[in-house]
Image (cartoon, rainbow over the protein chains, first blue to last red):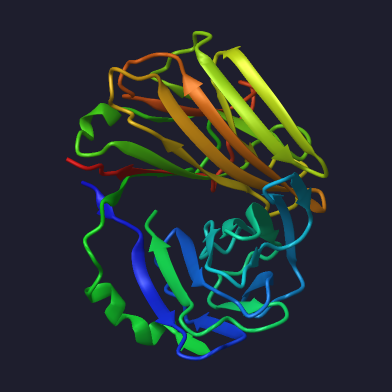
Length: 151
Length: 190
């Protein structure tokens, strides 16, 4: 007996430029979470995702290619002022005995493609996620979706 | 802008039909040497497999590798290419190997609550005309910084995949309780 997974939990499309989007009261009945952001930002720069309002316990490492070089750095992935996408996966987000790993893929066609991993060093279940742009706004039309992945 | 997901529950009732299904999950309640999924060739509705792993082992130190083996085949029929970022970028290729060297896991001296996580995609797993290609993305907090690894692999046999085994790279080590292994099926076109 199989179980349907990748269940859409919520989605929103911006009707106006917005710096931050927060999903709260996240359903705790799934194994992993996937957040998909598709759209544009006013200024190409890093995009952050903050669990439970805690900015103190996040670490990141990314590898990326710019079209002419590959590199790595301990920083976030960004979105671009042309169409871009982020796919952000949180593992065992509802567990209370594990720190939370995440993997991110980002695609900014005019800029770079990147792959990022990291950890939120906290064993609390993730009940809210804030997605915000480092310096500016997500443009109107940018779409944010949250999916639950059954375990 | 804030969205209360509890008020968005109606999205569940209108969820679209999906072609991505959870097939099996093992969540460890005690330490074990290996995790095996058998009878996978019965999932004939699916073209590809997707695996999600959260794991930690009893190996000494702060990192370990979770290998996978198909069809319990330990012949030297595996090739793995790994790109790793851990302060610098490195590329390693393992040929004539007896398993696919894939997931990063936490180990004995990792901090409490630290596990490694990642995904593995296995393509055309029932096709008897192709070697089996797969791809792994994994991350682990090692010390104060993450490790990030992207790997691809080939199993140089054309046998349909009926069994996948996961085990720590050193056979004397075990996965710890709380580690999770989930397998999903992805339907393909007609």
